[in-house]
Amino acid sequence: MSAPTKRNTRQRTAIIDFLKTRKEFISAKELYSEMEDSKVGLSTIYRALSDLVNDGDLDVFIDNDGESRFRLCGSHHHHHLLCRKCGKSVEFQAPEAEALAERLGASEGFSEMEHRLEIIGTCQECA
Amino acid sequence: MSAPTKRNTRQRTAIIDFLKTRKEFISAKELYSEMEDSKVGLSTIYRALSDLVNDGDLDVFIDNDGESRFRLCGSHHHHHLLCRKCGKSVEFQAPEAEALAERLGASEGFSEMEHRLEIIGTCQECA
DNA sequence: CGGCTTATTGACAATGATTCCCGTTATCAA
DNA sequence: TTGATAACGGGAATCATTGTCAATAAGCCG
Image 1: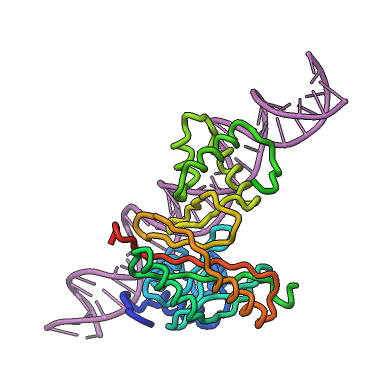
Image 2: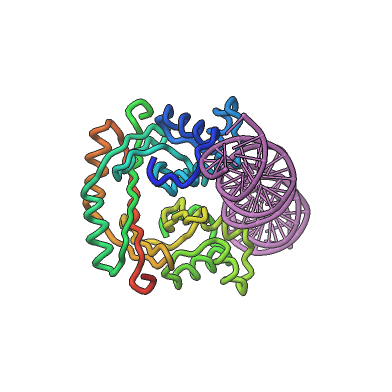
């Protein structure tokens, strides 16, 4: 994990271990109920997720119901292809997007660019 | 306006007219207070915004506080360059992104692709 | 191994955007 | 004008997320 700014507690370890076993995005509430055996409080889950996002260890996106969904991510910058029905996701890289962000931001006088690219479609099974 | 599914009431007209005068994104609450002279209820504002989004007349994005922000948009597909400090936004088109979405989605067996691209940076005044 | 200092936890309350409810009001066609 | 129905609006309800704060546990030092 990069830039660990927090102590290693039982709860944090449990959360990270759980996330490692999980490929798809998950919400804080779902994490809470799927981890009930670990006896981790909901506040603690929210705090841990927020720290992990700040450390860059977690991907987030806000779904159509306004709920945040999380997933461990690699260290490379990447994007997601998501199925609008089942939520299945595929990571991909897009050097075009990186370049575009730099070029376009610079031309408008912006600095410290970040970018987000999401492709949403219907996957084969759900079509 | 495309595909008008609703009646033209005083309130809806007032909301659309207000949005026409407004270049930047605005939240429902802000719209409510800036339009208080027009005596439009908050529920009505939410309903109208939601309908306009469904009709494709309004762009939305969810800001970092989880609040939705709206703006009238043209009919062409476009993306946004946003300032992370002041929220100033610039529209741009990115044919690369369109192509990428099609190509990548298809290669994973996805169909009916949509995509979102956002570039976030710090604008000159806020730097 | 104890004790100390301080970050972390967790139960619960509070917040805040959005949606729901429902009696009232406006619109429109006949 | 009237009746049917869509839209309003204000307040209550919802629900994810954040704040509070006393109790607990990490990491550390001797």
